[in-house]
Image (cartoon, rainbow, N blue to C red):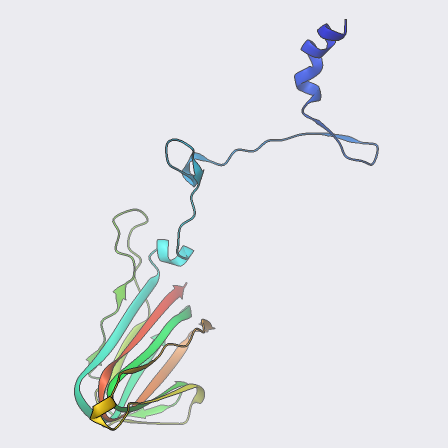
Length: 205
């Protein structure tokens, strides 16, 4: 009789859990969807290195190189109609010195005649299709100025003056910040500087 009971009700009873308060509940064993698994044997959960925005192709990067010694003020304007995350802001100098300041708002003088490249960080052919960027990055090559605005961040770099032990210096703050829609300015004050400025954004429409 006990064997018959076990055959009939055993599998059912194994799915019942004592909740500890006088009630019972059915055990539910969930399996992950096939799309979340990798491999064909000994499958494991797929864990991609990257953000959702990266795979949705909403991450972009831009840069400005100063290949020869440059002295003057370079002003970069970032106009964003959407929220965005500044994922990276780096300045590398191999000669001379540079001061980089970020402002929210302000009144610039000069002509924004230069449009910086704004390239997707993900050009893989897998879905979804490419996202149309909304942030526009332009610049006044040199000779402009900016008055007013709210300073957000300042970075200074200076290489060694003695050529016998000169070396490149760089600043890549490990600080991810979220910004509201608006107009932002970066003023880069250069003194006989050779280097490169790099930025990376994630748009959050």
